[in-house]
Length: 331
Image (cartoon, rainbow, N blue to C red; front, side, top):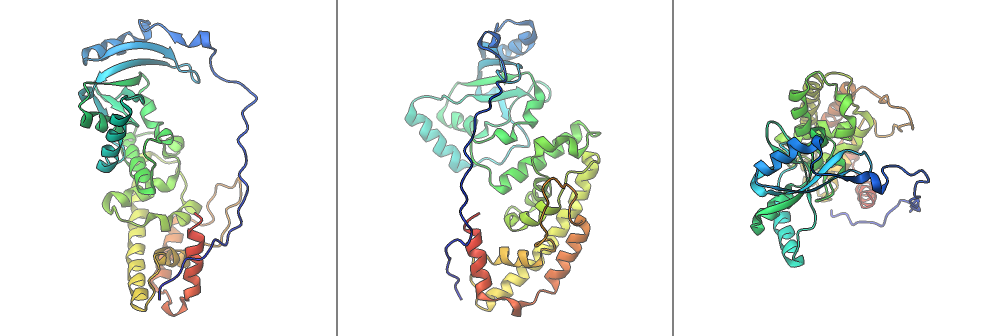
């Protein structure tokens, strides 16, 4: 029985207009200009020249005041950060075509020092690949001596919109890299870099199963997953356990979906519906300002798995699925 999509049942809310801050921050114009021969940038300037690039100028970044070099670099001198999302050949091809049509490459890469003598771009993988497709000799870059910028750039990456899988994979790769570089660092120390704790858990699953339906489990994880005050390496081992248990739950969900399909249910929202039904915190509201989860993650996973094993197929009604379809269309 095919389920038709119904109109949204949610009330439309007015968006709040963005109000400019009345408090002004950052540097004045006369504070921004920086001589490219400044001693603080001498080593980085020599490194750029050694790699076959050219320093064009330098400035103090207007918000933080950190020094930045404007340079061109040969494409062979730059590598994407090792924890960045996977390359999309389709996006690279489209991007190269649009750059060719515009006749100019006007979006500089952000480049930072990586490990050793590497130069990393934390948010320019597709532009770098497009430049290689176009056969460019040099590419414009904003080069920062601040290596840690590579781990803070995720939230600014709008070059190709992240879907849940892309974001989760990038976060877990970043976490594994940081666990090696700073083994004593707590997971909670990197909350700004990781953005949300569920990205870590989902990232572990996506590493093994690229087609995992993470979107169906995201509402469950948002209510329970929290950054740990333990060392990052220890925390990741705990998350490996959470991920394994979620995979076991997904295996049961797939069995339920197959049985429902055999009974004639053909809705594309079957997984969302089933996962919502077995979610033990589905009706728990997260109170504003309260950071403690409504239930320990381990206990919630146990209850969720038990609900999946005991799922009552006869309780499913076509109207339930239609409601899920209507609500999902608004998300």
